[in-house]
Amino acid sequence: MDFFARAALTSIAMAGTIVAPASALAWGPEGHTVIARVAVTKLSPQATADLQWIISVGVPALNAQMPGGKCQINPSDPWGPVPNFETDHDYHTNLANWPDCWRILTPTTAPWHFDDIPLGESPSGPLNAASEPWCADGCVSTALADNLHKLASGALSPADAAMALAFVVHFVGDMHQPLHTEDNNDRGGNEVKITTGGAGVNASNLHSLWDGPLVAAALGPDLEPATATVTSDDAAAPGGWTAGADTVDGVIQASDAWAEDAHALAQPAYASLSIPVGGAPTSQVHVTADYVQQEKQVVEGQIDRAAVRLGAALNAALAWTPPAS
Image (cartoon, rainbow, N blue to C red; front, side, top):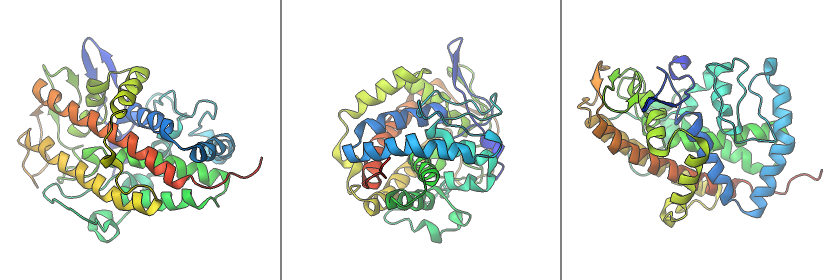
């Protein structure tokens, strides 16, 4: 898997068109940051205390371990501003996007961000991801489970606790991006070349469209209003979104359904563009304004769900007493 084919995205609004570079990451830095910002408002007092310890003690320890001073997180502002890995070659980041920075330095971790379930399959029940061919090199389902257990142990070094926290925050977001839970022999839509004239967005491939321009179409290009929108949406979130997710093992079990639901949303995302299941990578697929209107609602709903579920996951994992300062 070529990492730089999914390199960082900065969504911008210009002349009424939402633009993405040719390559992108799940939800883009904006989407991951919004999910994290909303999720941390839903934490219990104990989880909040653990989180603050990781930020104040673990983040500086992690920064000190990073080679060449790369991938630095500001512990005074861990959830923003959003990074731009394309222009900032020191790769300054926030906590929610640290795993994307880390995979620039460690490309072998790239498969951890995806469940490349074949598009034509419709899994239900336990995924058993570890035994699936699409998870042979790791996948987001197993990576999330592994890091949830680590984070919940309360026995990690400060730097490792910060790393596990960053992975959990990021992977819950990744798991809700439909094109991160499917593959159609096209690297999750990266090899589906698109045109977007008249659609109000600009992207070169299907994956990058979903990572950034659809997020900006749904929530706007600015972080603060986008966070406010998701916060408002989630005020009325149904309890079923976090059913069973009150323990770490419950979150892991529930996350199979989260990934399966996202995968099911990928199927109409392809079908609406008349892309055949199992077909070869497609070129010059035209994305219409109607497609954008349809799918931006899906994007907003998935970001809403990710924020609520991340809050539940962190409450389950952060239930230990921080070391005395």
